[in-house]
Length: 279
Length: 272
Ligand SMILES: Nc1ncnc2c1ncn2[C@@H]1O[C@H](COP(=O)(O)OP(=O)(O)O)[C@@H](O)[C@H]1O
Ligand SMILES: [Mg+2]
Image 1 (cartoon, protein in one colour):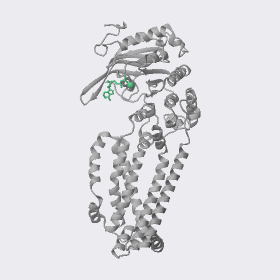
Image 2 (cartoon, each protein chain N blue to C red; image 1 turned 180 degrees about the vertical axis):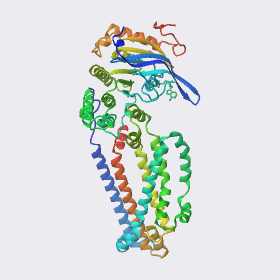
Image 3 (tube, each protein chain N blue to C red; image 1 turned 120 degrees about the horizontal axis):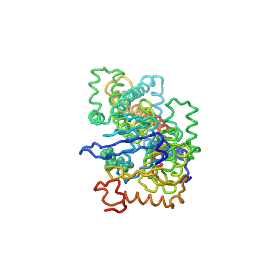
Image 4 (cartoon, protein in one colour; image 1 turned 30 degrees about the horizontal axis):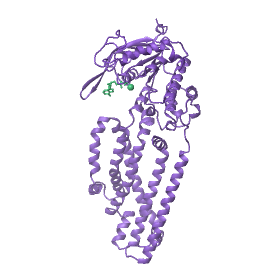
C-alpha cells in the first residue's frame, strides 16, 4: 500500500452527492464520490470537462454545501462554514486577483487580518514570492503581468497562506505550453520544498500523471470515481525523461482509455471495467 | 522561467502626455471660439450677444466683488456641494446595502427607475410646501434629485462584483467590514464614481432651477433677474460664471477619479 496512507487524513470525502438546483429542476453534478487525501500527498483529479471537478473543489473549499454525504478536513466535518487552512487557486486567475492591489498586497491581504505580526506577514510574502520567482514584481499590479505570472501570484498568495490543504482547479488550463511546463515544475518543487498537501484538478491526463503521487479519474457528468491509482514514478520528475518512462506511458494510456472510451457518457460503467476500448 | 513579455511602466507617463495634449487642444479650441465670438460681436453688434471682453468686464465689476461672492456665487456652489454630498452620503451606503443582496436589488432597482423618471422640477412645489423657500429646501431638493443616478450606479457596481473575487475572499476567510472595504467597494468604485459624476452635472441643473423658481440670491436667480430687467450683459456674465464653475467642479472630480481608478484604467488598457 501507499506510504502516505499511514499518514493522517487531511481530506476525507464520503458518499458525496451534489446537485445544482436550477429553474428546471436539479442537475446532479456529483454522484456518490468517496476518496481521501493524506498529509503531504499530491493527488490529481482528472476528468472530462463538465464532469464536476470545479463543483468538488468548491465543496471542499466551503463555497458550496454538499447535498449528501460528508466532507472532513483534518477530521473535522465541514458544516456550512469555510474550513480553516484550505487555499484554492482558481482556474480563472486573472479574475481571482484583486486588480486594485499590488502583487505584494494581493499576497499579504489574506494574512494581514490574522493575528500575524507585520514583520511575519512581510516575511511570508517575500518567501512565497521568491518561491514563484516574482520578488522583483512585488510592487507591480496584476494587470501589468502576463497570464503565467498572474497565475504565479495566485500560487504565491496560496503559499503565503500556508494551507494545510492546497486546492488547485485547472490552474494552468489557459497558459501557453512553455509557461505551463514551468508552472508544473514550480508546483512540484513547492510540494517537495514545503511538504504541502495538494489536491490538483485537471482535464489533462499527462499533467495529472506527471505531477502527482496518486491519480483519481472521474467519469463524465455526473462525477463518479472510475479509478484511484498510485503513480509509480520517482521524484524529482523531468518534463522530457519522465514522460518517456514505460510506467508513465502505461498509466496515461489506462486513464485515456477510461475517459475517452465512447459510450461512457451514456451508461454508467463499473470502476473495475478498465479495459481500454471496451464495448 | 518563461517571461512571456516584460511588463511596461511607461503607461502613467503616456497617460500624462495624453492629458496634457487634451488640455492643450481644448484650451486652443476655446481660445479660437472666444476670439471668433469677439470678432463677430464687435463687427455686427447683435443686441442679445455682448462681446467676451464686455462680459469679462461685467464679471469683474459685478460678480467678482465681495457682495457678488457672498450673495450669489458662494451660495450657489454651496447648494450644489451640500446637495450632492448629502445625496452621496445617503446614496452610496444605501446602494451598497441594496446591491449586496441580489434579490433585494432586483426588487428595488425598478422602483429607483420610476423615481428617477419623475422630472425633479415637478416636485419642487411640494418641497416648497414642506421646506419653505430657504437654503435647506434647495439643498434637499438637489439631494433628492441626484440621489437616483447615484443609487442606480452604486447598486449596479456592487451587484456586478466578480463572483470569483468574492469566492476568493470567502476562501481566505475575509468577511465583514474587510470584505466590504477592500473587495466590494474597490470593485464597485468605477460605477460609484460614474454615478457621482453624472449626479454632479445634474446637481448644477437642479441648483439653477431651484434658484430661478424660489430664491433671493444665487447665480440662477441673478441670471433670471437680469433677463427680466433686460440687463443682457449681466445675464451672460452669470451664464459664464456658472459654466466655469461647472467645469471646475467636474475637473476636480475627474482628477480624484483618475487617482482612485488608476488600476481600472491600466487594467482596461491591458485588456485591449
Ligand atoms: N451554477 C450551476 N448551475 C447549474 N449547473 C451547473 C452550475 N455549475 C456547474 N453546473 C453543471 O455541473 C456540471 C459540472 O460542472 P463543473 O463542476 O464546473 O465541471 P468541471 O469543472 O469538471 O468542468 C456541469 O454539467 C455543469 O453544467
Ligand atoms: Mg472546472
